[in-house]
Length: 118
Image (cartoon, rainbow, N blue to C red; front, side, top):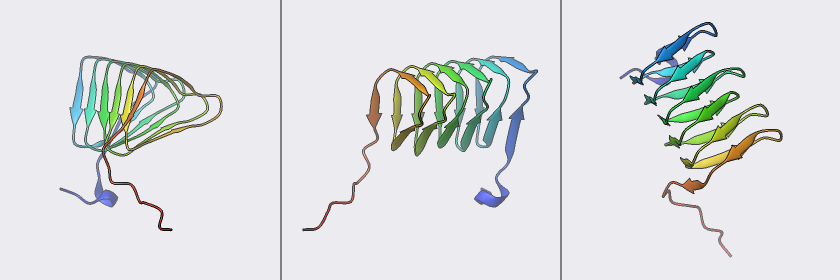
């Protein structure tokens, strides 16, 4: 498998609509519309006017668009100020910027937390 600097990036343009599931081992940038589930091993970048109607599984998510479905990430989910998620989120971390909309439940992955030493 390629290292992060050589990771492949797949892009879905703002005039493209995908009807069906997307599965891959790549990073994915979506500017258009997806009606189906998205399952990728890499990073998901959802542009401001992009939408996904389906469940999402990825390594990391940087979201500025809208998702109607559940989101599960191995790493962080970052909701930028225009982002909207209607569904549940499971991730190591959830970062919600001012202006983002999140309607659902959040479950944190079972990762070891650093304890404070006294």
